[in-house]
Image: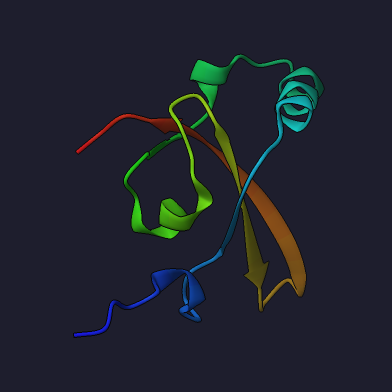
Length: 81
């Protein structure tokens, strides 16, 4: 049986891994620490292909059909089952 690529599903938002400099810029911009970010498990299907490690930050782009705009959310990668 073929494996399904969930990242290409229409209902899954675009996920990208931030570089170290982008991560630093994000934390400075919002004056927060890593542990204050919402979390995402390392083994989450939406980030499976991103080669993430614990401590990475994921940028999630969501489109709003009602507002007609793009919004970005950030998640800290944590270890989980």
